[in-house]
Image 1 (cartoon, rainbow, N blue to C red):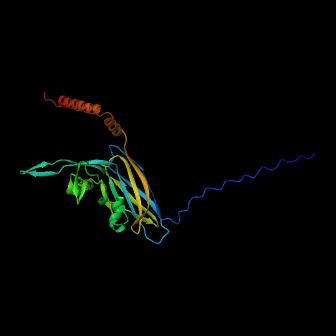
Image 2 (tube, one colour):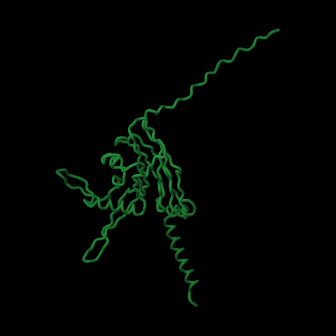
Image 3 (cartoon, helix red, strand yellow):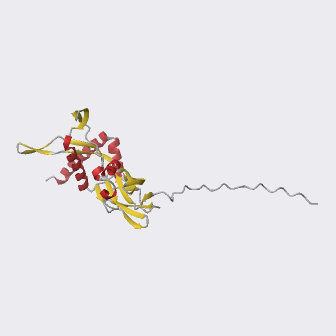
Length: 269
């Protein structure tokens, strides 16, 4: 006796795989860091991080790569010495807000050959175009028939003070400009090195990789880098900021105890 076989199961149609958007006809740049986290302890003597990437350029026009790495902003206090009656005295201190604690630019060639002054100023690319906030104190004056024009109390000396900020940071290896810092190692592949000195501030760093073509920015890749304290240094740092009064009292007691112990050890019989 023959039995009817069960009907065949319905055919299952697999969904078509998702198609990626084609970017073959776009000029763009992609980049990454060899290490996105730097740990700082008592033995930290600086770090060298490699930034690498690729340029996708289907056109015949050449392209330039500019790398900008900016560290956390921090206030900068400057004092200018003045000579009064033959005596050098400290003048009124000037406090700049928002100056980057670290700033580096690297490019395939000098920035002035890549883009015009106005374009670099708009993007804030380059030490000469770095945005550093002036002191908050200001006054209002009338300039060229326009009332209520806000002017920094530094007046025309603002640029001199700004140059002093940059000069001090460059002397500490915290600001750097390398017109040949980006090198192409193969067709479309490039690399650049980010040198962090031992005095580099901790916090969040931001890296921008700009791709310029015919003097115009056509693509940008944004990266982040974290520099953080580890070990006992981090514990002391966090304790000092969470409980500053307790930290201050403990420091005074420790100094007094150290002085008393030294006097007991080295006292003369």
